[in-house]
Length: 112
Image (cartoon, rainbow, N blue to C red):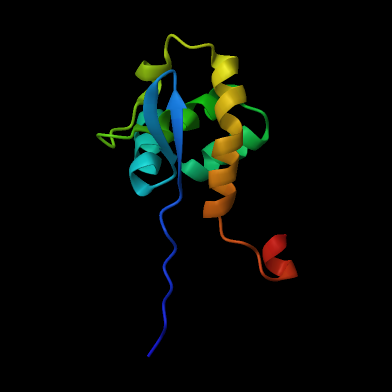
């Protein structure tokens, strides 16, 4: 018999101007990102690593959900907020979640 240990869902609760939200990288959020932007998550992450601020914003928009309904808030929720302020405030949370979600390379070959 194999023993399987499943990780808990990784999410961070945040309060954005009085609205209780959950920031997470679940299949729902990834699907929202890919459907909305017509780009795969991996390609989007590569663009972000190259400094594409618009792609960073798009990922943030897809990762933030209403705490009560679970509905992804999307770009419409953030339209009246300063874009650089959004990136500055939420990028550390996004980076933390992405790093938790990605598998860790175990050998030198995997690290390349």
